[in-house]
Image (cartoon, rainbow, N blue to C red):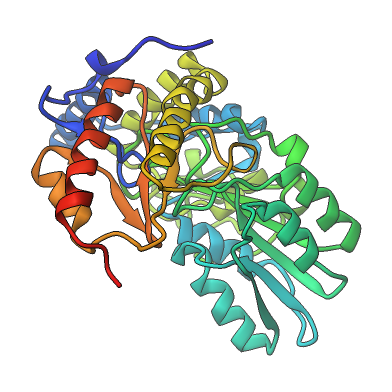
Length: 385
C-alpha cells in the first residue's frame, strides 16, 4: 500500500527539502513531545520509581523485535552500531588461518572492529570489491569460502543503497559454518527484514536514522545460540532479579534471560526510551512494507531522472527501495552538498555518490526541486578531474 504524505506529523518548514534520512532523521512531533515529558520527569526525580528503570526497556525491546520478526528476549539495548559490533566480535572465534569478509567502502562502524580483530588474531581481512554490475550478492558469495569465520555485512550499502540478498548469503554462511553479522542501520524500519529468513548470528541497528529515534540509541539482535556469550561490560541492570534489587549489596552473578546480558549500562534512559517507544509504534502502525513501497516511488523516479542527466545508480534489482546514490562519471564537486544545503535542499555525498534518502514527509515535488537545482549546479560547477 502506498501511504499518503505524512509531512504534517513532522516540523519541516515549507522551504526545506529534506532528502537525507540516511544521515539523520527528523523527529516526529509526537516523539519530540515524549522527549519533553521525559526531561520533565528527570527534572523531578522523586517521581521516578524502580519499575521505571525496567518497564520502558521491555516495551522498546518488544517493539523493535516486532519489526524484524524476533522476540523481546532476542534484543539488547545498545548505544551505537559500533557497540553492537563489538559485542558480536567478542563472541565469535576467529582463527589465524581464517578470514573476515567485508564490503569495499563499508561503514566504519562495521569495519574498524573487524580490522582490529583480524590484526589481533592474524586473520585475513577480505574486502569484496564493488561489482561493476551492482550485484553485491554474487560478489559476496564468490568471496566466501570454508575459511571464512565471519561475514560482517550490511543489508544495504550506506553510500548508494546497493542491496544484498541476505537470505541467500545467510544460507551460504550456514553451509560453510560462517557466522553472519548484519549491520541493519540503513535498512531496518524502511524495508522488510526478517531474522527468521536471514538467520544472522547477530544484527545491530542504530536507531537515529530509519527508526526515527533520538541519537545514542540502538538495538542488538542475538540468535538463540548466541545468547549465552560474554557482554563487553559488567553491571547490575542485566543481572537476574535486577528489577527487585534496589539497595541490595548481595549481587547476583546470573544474567537476565536472552540477549539482555548484552544491554549497555544506563540503558534506562528516561528521555530517549519514551521517544523511541513513540517512534517505533508509529513505524509499526505505518507498516515497514508500506514505507518501503511508498519510498520506492521516489527512489525509482530519482534513478530515472538521474539517468536522463547522464548519472548512474545501482540497477533496480540490486538496490534498496528507500535510498539511492547517483554517481557521475566525472565525480561531483566537493562542495556540492553544501551548495544545495544553502538553497534549502539537503542530501549527502557518500563515497562519491550523491545519496538521496527520502521518508514519508517527502513527495516527488521535493525530488523535482532537487534535480532542477542540481542541473544548474552541474552546469555552473566544474566536476573534479
